[in-house]
Amino acid sequence: MTRIEINRQMKKLMLYQQGQLYKTYPIAIGKAATPTPLGEFKVYEKNPHPHPGLGTRWMAFTYQRHGIHGTFNPWTINTAATAGCVRMYNQDVEEIYPLVPMGTAVIIFDREDVVKVPEHIGKEVYFVRPGDTVETIAKRFSITPAQLIEFNKIKYPTYLHPGKMLLIPKFKKG
Image (cartoon, rainbow, N blue to C red):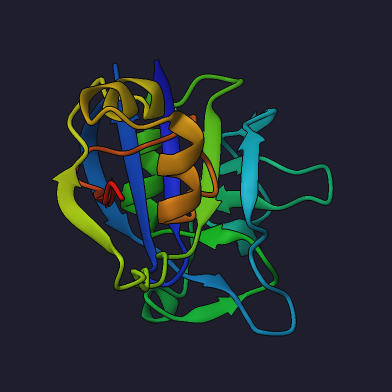
């Protein structure tokens, strides 16, 4: 299964195939006035010959016409320069285009803030491994999935990417 994860703060697009990170690409994101939307979407349209303003490839993921596309202005990569789209170098979008089937999940998020841990709760650090789910991690540490989600403020619990750091609450008995 293929999916795309986009971290707006890091200005990175991660392409996953069969649940494994395939490659990370630098991107440009929406300007403050026209931000790239947060959330879970799906690629619903692909065009190998878009308008020249969209570089050499186009993949739409919102019906408001947000998409992943190339650029003939490569100096804009790693900036907030778009009208809400995700802009890539032409050679990068050409590389991923044939690897991204229609219906591919596109998950857009900001890097999560550091979690402030109340002093009366101990904690353990865990790094997500390929194949992990909220449920399997919670079971491993004898907590509920809801506790893990709330403690880490996980916005998209169905999409945990390998390498993500989670804090595991250790509730003191008493």
